[in-house]
Image (cartoon, protein in one colour):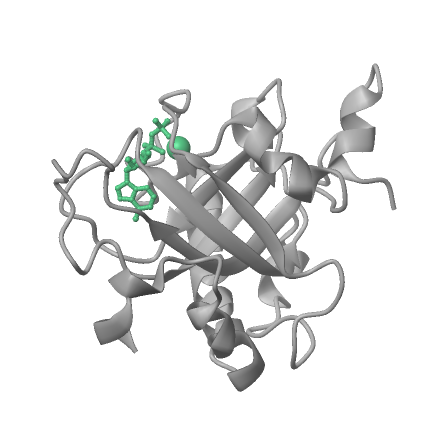
Length: 201
Ligand code: ADP
Ligand code: MG
């Protein structure tokens, strides 16, 4: 299976598979082995960038974008699709942070790596939805993420409702999959700033 980076070099990118009702009704509620397997865990880190205003928030699912250079560790070893893991937004270095203690803890996340077929995206992007209600946006803040498993390939959506529904399933599958001891321990991985997470366990 070609990695996302290899596919990005091709003049014609393959089309994302079509959305099918069958795929959705048969989706497993938990994915991956009982412990993360190679190439996971994959570490990603970088400052949160503005996306393309593609309406993540409108869909009830804001996604924080990482810069191109920050996604090399995953695009060179993995395929496009939806992943799960943990992410943390770090307090700003100048100390003038708008984030509260809860915001800067390590939270479960779902990440999309791909062309985003619904919006006919042109470049490979990694967008992370953190499963936490933030008090404010955090553009420009550093974000660390640990990708622990793969949920599903990219799909081509014919309706906004189907997309929203699948995102909800992705979130549930991510939480179920992370709720296993060998995954939970990565919440305390040294990739994260644990001084922010002492009270979070
Ligand atoms: P953009 O196109 O700029 O990525 P989105 O609608 O996807 O816009 O919103 C993403 C932004 O929303 C993030 O960069 C971040 O600042 C903010 N945000 C607020 N809550 C979350 C969350 N739970 N997960 C990810 N981003 C969030
Ligand atoms: Mg976004």
